[in-house]
Image 1 (spheres, rainbow, N blue to C red):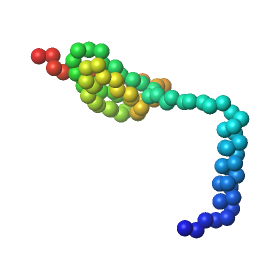
Image 2: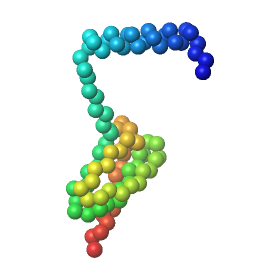
Image 3: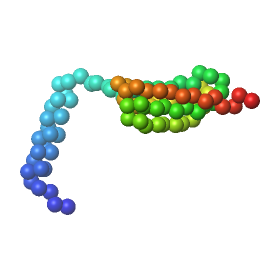
Image 4: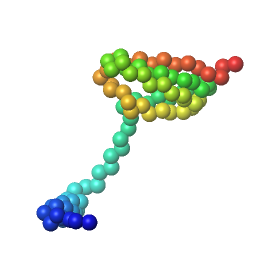
Length: 90
């Protein structure tokens, strides 16, 4: 493995900088969440479809009763449609 001296020196500087900052700054915990979550509160399993009208994209999936599904693939500024089909009603 060949290491360029300049890059190694920069990496050492970054380590020292982060080491110094971690002693001075308070600990911060971040929790990243999906922009949209679907929760099935019905006593039935269901299939759903999400349609983004701005980008003309479809997403289909299955959600069990009591389940929660994070949806990362949508843009909240877009016009979003939701279609639900209930299963196991017989």
